Length: 171
Image (cartoon, rainbow, N blue to C red; front, side):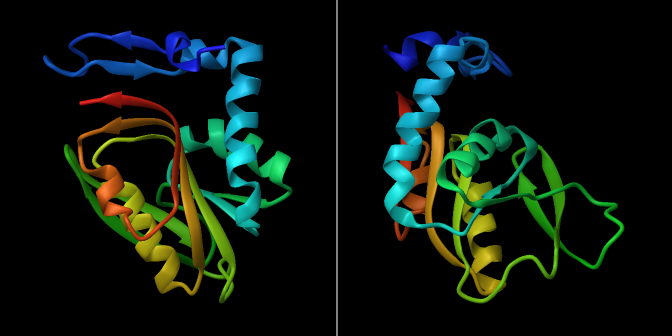
């Protein structure tokens, strides 16, 4: 099964010249979704991660089933306003600042962490998440994505980490 052919492309969205990769068409196809997650899990098995971290809620579509298959914990970086002792992190996005919060006691020294998200483009968000995790004492054992937009520099920002992507689009 060719996973790439199942992902819908929406031309000129969110602006002219960009073709949005809509993974919802993959998610509604149970067999394709299962195959995609199983292929990613097979490529991540050797990492022996303790925890999968999703930089945002969309990463859950990959992070949650990977966590289940690999038998790891799962953490989603959340939006501000959590009722616990948190580490707040601000990162600049193309369209503005986007703060996220992390419970300050979750990451333990030398914890092996795999960062999972649905897509990597420029890699700015994931690179900053990796830096944050390392500052908190984690050992980042790799990054994993369903979709990679090559040519936008994302992989280069993660050159020190084993980066896995299931489907690539050249930009």
